[in-house]
Length: 259
Length: 202
Image (cartoon, rainbow over all chains, first blue to last red; front, side, top):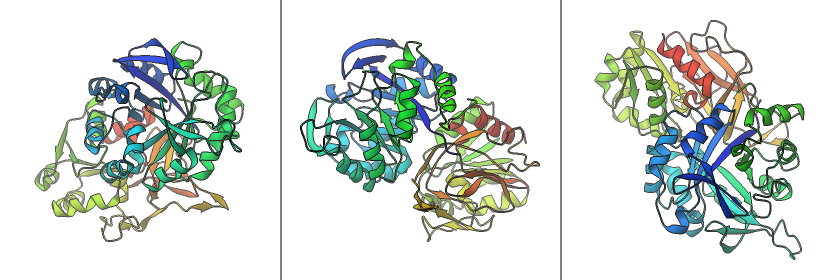
């Protein structure tokens, strides 16, 4: 049976893993390659490395970090941040990534989704969406808005519409981060995740707000997520994926165990 | 020496990296003569079935057919498995090797009245393992491997392991010296490494 995936996310800045709260107040959490291997050994189903400042500062992705991290990693490995062209994506794949995650650059030029997919396959393209509920709207979830540049810029696009367009243009997965819940450890935005998951036929990865095993069970159930991503709860030894999965299995969620 | 065929398929680097990690000697090639000389051949692949048309242009299809006939071990991964069948609805104009009967088809949009997501992405279980499979030696039913694909091969008497998603499909196929896996052993942690080690040890 297809399992629900637990994805460990490494937000990288200047070659170090960092963790922010609601996209600001950043603290150091360690070396990317070392943490990636620790997560894989600890039972994470996938590793995502996001170069969180690449777009903002106009730098290329940290290819050396990618290479070092991918060297002996035998689980799927996604890299995002600063990928603006099919050539940028090719460099990241050559460095050892299995998938790329594109966000601002896909909004700026949606053709990029198909360009990367055309060369490397749809399964290699994740479109990441940073979403914020539109408070005060008649339907704050349905009218949630897409933000870019690390959550700094509103786009005027509706999350649901953009997710559908990304799918039509050939995205293999959607990585949905709720800016409302990110870093708060109070749970994922299950309503928003469910709305997006029902709007598209491709898998949806929920992100933002993981604080406990119950939050994951909730987003896999009510939130209809195919995978869930977390960062801070792993880095500081709160739990590892194996422990998290044992709790999820007890809650009736199908997970990869033993791992 | 394992000849790893380069037809510009996405996961070539990962597959070679993993084989090397396991101690195998590999040669990445587009040369039919290298394929003819090899005792083992790996055809990686991820992405579109159309990409396999390059194998004909490079005259590798013929070389593979001859190598298989003289007993070389062959392993296809993902699209590499699909290529062993007669073809795929993903690219009807591109014929497969036709070593195994049947055609690869897309996952249905609906299964038992429920929408079925595609691509099928993630860790899924191996079931109905064939006891005499060389490739799946030591793998237990219910162990998990990583998949990412939208097209799948049908079940047949040569199926060495099946996986349930929108009904069962062929996760691994094997007849004598010709084998294929739809999952990505290079991304399937210890279970995947075991499968590749089994191939290396043949």
